[in-house]
Image (cartoon, rainbow, N blue to C red; front, side):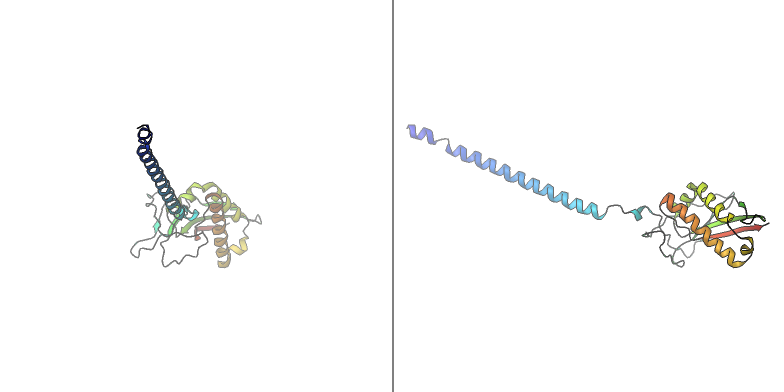
Length: 203
């Protein structure tokens, strides 16, 4: 009789062990599932992690029926364009037949003494870009250093060379490079395709 009493609790022990084993297996499965989900989402997030070029201005695909956007003095500025084509850097070779161009006139003319001290140069300029409104916003934000860079380039000009077509084209390239350099230094992206003269006076 005493033998039966000592052996009676054994089925309960087995039941407890089974319960503990099931809880343990459930916990392992849950941890495994959590780890798997973490790895899955981690890989997914890494694949979609922001790249520097995601924040660059984007190219605006050309609409054959649209007119180039310009901002005239006194006129209300057109809505900034939204680009859709990402580029790896601002030295990307743009096909002008595929992308929309925007002209942005600099409101005030530039006046400076010429390098040889024989007179002064006064020019008005307009900038062109194939990129979206971010480039225009960058130009407006960096107005002061851009004006400074343009004046420094103008002050180095030879009036004899400026009187030739070749000299004017060379000045266009120098101004484009100087403005893009300011934008690269300050904003991380240039985006100016060319500088056009809206007025040019040498005296």
